[in-house]
Amino acid sequence: MAKQPVDYEALLSSIEASFPMVQILDKDGKVVNEDIMPDLSDEELVELMERMVWSRVLHDRSMALARQGRLGFYAPTMGQEASQLASHFAFKKQDWLYPGYRDIPQLIQHGLPVSQAFLWSRGHVEGNNYPEDLHAIPPQIIIGAQFIQAMGNAVGQKLAGKEDEVTFTYTGDGGSSQGDTYEGINFAGRYKAPVVFFIQNNGYAISTPREKQSAAATLAQKAAAAGIPGVQVDGMDPLAVYAVTKQAREWAAAGNGPVLIETITSRFGPHSTSGDDPTRYREQESFDYWEQRDPLIRFRNYLKEKGLWSDEKEEELIEKTKEEVKEAAKEADQVPKMKISDFLKSMYNEPGQNIVEQIEKYEAKESK
Image: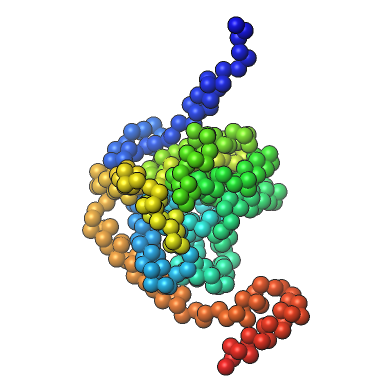
């Protein structure tokens, strides 16, 4: 029998073996890979934990506000604190953030006032009125479209000769199935644009399990088709996420082109507050597995072992954040609600005669 020209099974195995998951802390917060420990001071370690706790509280209070009818669309973030905040921690103020709708925590940490994030959730135009020094755009609702936008911004940075400035963007595992995602990484790779792409693999694109989306063993390996580096990291491990992201930023800023990072994480709750019920498509074993790998518990154990964290410190931070969120919600409540005429005015730069007539009609009604 003639020898086959290609061993397809061996080929697939070699691809899968090229994308091992990077990890520094195990689920109990014990160091398992000292060699790649990031160079973070004790103060920086504490600050990272503070941001993660802040994000968990923001999530809890946002869910409460949503139930009260004081928010519009909200995408839960509980469980993704390491994936979101530890990655953001590796970037700089001058870097440009192109978020998806679940990336509100990074957007606020990048400089957006909490009250404006709430206004965005309510669909208020003032939620998009960003400070001039905020290098970010409003969250993208169209799945995967932010990869195209981020690529464009990064190409612009390269053409403008920006030094030590990159773009970074996030989507979920569902977003990795969109054409925009591949087009973004492919074009960025061709022109060596300074951008870091994140695929937050939280296991479900709403209710569609990861294994039903793609036959690829990892989502990181999708980078290979675009000729760029791809890496998979334990997205519940803040130290590993930070270390991988910091290296990726340095790579992109040095002119080497983009990097794709897949973070293996989990959203503990529903996809959004818009009617999703994860208990209909996830088994209890799935929740139990990931809750045992909670990034806050993992990092808390690590910091307590180093004598850098305490329950008292955490409780104080929780109460402080609750008050911050409460005041932000009050501030958002005080912004005048938009009128129909406002929507029409903000929708058109030069409204046609029919729109002008509608504006006049609604203004007359609204003035009564």
